[in-house]
View 1 (spheres, helix red, strand yellow):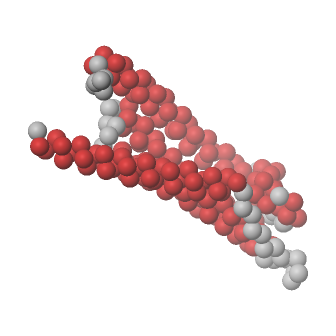
View 2 (cartoon, rainbow, N blue to C red; view 1 turned 135 degrees about the vertical axis):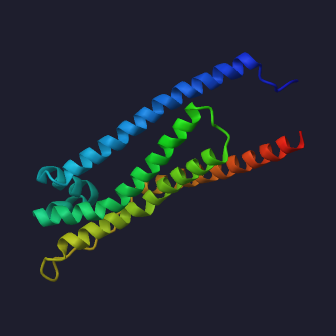
View 3 (spheres, rainbow, N blue to C red; view 1 turned 180 degrees about the vertical axis):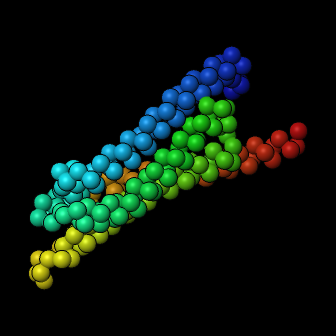
Length: 188
């Protein structure tokens, strides 16, 4: 039994991957822009800031003050996980661009996948840390006994750890495959 893929089928699969990758590059680009714009608006529109705070902290978020200076503090705290997310999306955008150009099994593709996996993995601990930092920073001006220390862990934080770990592992396998292919090509 042969495992060789006929040339027309391979070309068709590569063309489908290229089309999908071009679309995903645009989807990723649009996502990056929307995230930046909407998060920017969330820090300048008080109602959106309150909703974001309540989403992150639940009922505790409704009790915290939210003056203009607090919105700046919120933006600074959210800048870290947001920056990691944008950096990861930028990596996956570049990965899709490479795939569209036919650069699939390369060391660069493996590295981009690893970096994207790392950005996903980092979202796991950044979620609880962000919530804790928000509650501490925004309740710091409260009188003693009315300050908040919040620790929230969600299933999304756990899933981010698992998915990020899987992506990093797949990237390592991909890197090994690229090295083996390069070694085999050197023998020919």
